[in-house]
Image (cartoon, rainbow, N blue to C red; front, side, top):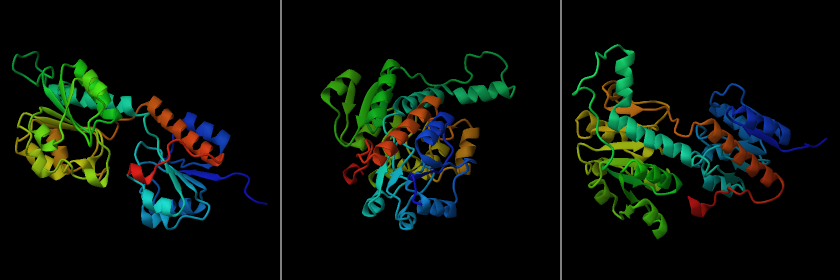
Length: 331
């Protein structure tokens, strides 16, 4: 007797409402432990699945895709990007790839603005001093941070998230500059009061705060290189809620250690989940604020991501083009 329904394999535990809906619609196999699959487990999954639902922690590279079973026709990523997937190799094998764009914009922008405030006003240091019993009462010279209003914000990547950050920053009284592959529509520039810089170098030399909001692609690897970071003045701060590889982390650490930057707020890291011991030391010294890649971590956001995955899978199974299909021109 043949298979009655395509097998959907999900590599990580998803929010219960999402899993419940998937059980109703699909023949689905879940990862009940929520531990990242080993390479051997990923090989087993990609050989057995008709549809694979990985997350950003799963590396679906050319070597893994080469071992895919003949039945695998869709990789429906539970994530905003697809930098964890070798899309070109998948397409060569006739495998469609989808993602979950647009649903994490507001959550990530909230966290970006939160980090800008936290670093500028030393919020994490203040909490630590209170919890550890180091507060002796109000003082006119203790725990002084930097005012946000009137500062110049430079946004690297003016897509949906970058624009959402700009709207929040405008409300805080920041002036907005941005660097993008191309200028946004004039109406958006006017709404945000944003100034376009074709040269990233020139923008970095003119801003007080940098927010990294561009996607991770081969072109953005170490976009903020050691050379470019040197354009920032010593009182500047940098916030990254995009991907760790966009900043040369070692160069950033060296500048923070040398006092060549005022601070940084990082939600993402090179080689995560491993964190550089030097970054941890800087955090203990109050020079950086570190978060464990939680910029999009809201209940609403995760459920919205799951619903996008379900729509992509259901549409594909019904013989139609998934709404969030990734094309080579998008890479």
